[in-house]
Image 1 (tube, helix red, strand yellow):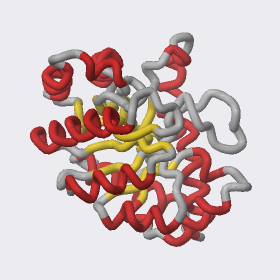
Image 2: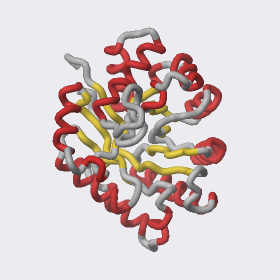
Image 3: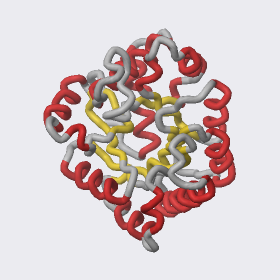
Image 4: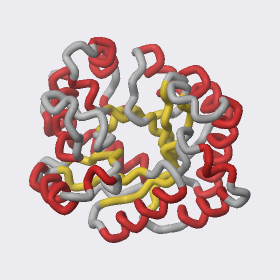
Length: 261
């Protein structure tokens, strides 16, 4: 790379919060050097939307799956067949976001686990990485990942655990994707995680329109602000922003099977 470039590995620009200014958001990204991003689904309907968006948007790729907060999709008898068909699109680079959510509890744990495992199996069949949604579910997430040992890459989306959990995730093959909360001044536990981990295990994301970093906390997030996440990592690692940008870029390209140039 000849100039500073950033890769936002998790965004939801198809959401309605961007309906009024999506082209302007994309332009601001380019100006800020956020030249690649992944558009993430959470249901079958959103999976179709993100694939269409990625197909029409340069340097954007899609991640498709059914999140644990949308278990109603899994009531359809052919839902995995539908997801398999969607995932055949050349712009799809992973299955996600999938996993457990014990905070919202939209489905019993056993149902969430069944949906999770079915999608991991699909990712293995398609030789794709998986992007994990894990909220208040560290133990269950690790248990499943240890049992299945997915060989095609695992991303822990918006990682929010302590150092011990981070190391356990890395031990089962995870790359940790860091988002806006690492910029919060009172988030000392995550600051320690960032300081102690090698940059080779880290990626950056926004989860737009959610989890805006300081100084935009409480406002709508957008991929431009992934630069603040990278800046915080550089500060905690006592290294250059250029080094963080390059390392997280190459990590993302490696995990998602994309060319680095």
